[in-house]
Image (cartoon, rainbow, N blue to C red; front, side):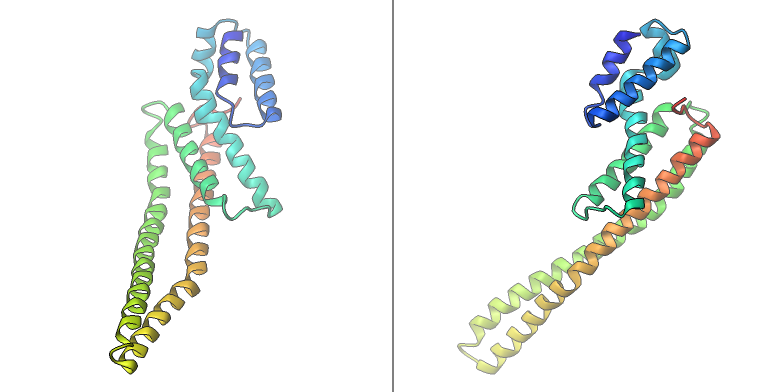
Length: 210
């Protein structure tokens, strides 16, 4: 049992020291209460240490951290998308890791349903990103061209410069809106996956923290 716990601990480096201690104490007590003394018996009950850590415990704590920040409003905009994407990925791994082949049917359907809005949001983001890139390139090119033309045809050069600066201004003006839509879109999908994860835990469709 100690070998199992030691290996589990080695896969919890992404958690804080306090969280690691909480996990280790919980599963040490659980295995002791269940009378499980061998590594093989622990694997049979909980899965391998890497499965339990990477695909279950970390998903639990990632969701817990996300929900805590939502409740307190302590969101760090620069890190929120990375945290949400990490949460989505860990939840998918948890579901795929702990569900049996037969039990995967319902989770797979639900994951597909949750992936649909993510795909839509991703497509919208890519489309808008392409528009923004085109707007930026157009502004830069027209400003450069206008600066050249103005020496040969003053008013034509001013017109081209005006269009270029307008395009660049639109890019700078709309960029915060694009960032807001992207961040909140990913966060919405993360919340959907968290609800899916909690639903499957409640319905016992895959192994949960006992």
